[in-house]
Image (cartoon, rainbow, N blue to C red; front, side, top):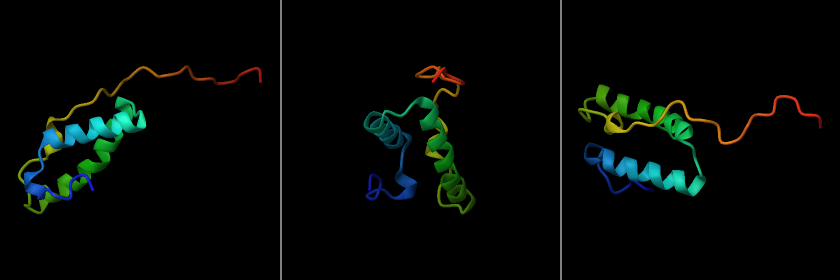
Length: 80
């Protein structure tokens, strides 16, 4: 729904960055989760490049931290 009015060749990293910011705010996603989503979407853009429909992936200019401190401590074995 977010990108239905775009042609694939006109989709910019600015639009994608705004979308990532939107879903991060709406869902309280961490940078690590956004990086995972980006990795999954990247396959689509690689296929479009291979098919000659676009020259460069707009995701190329979007970076997220790979190592982010955990939001909460992990509990391995608790007394309960």
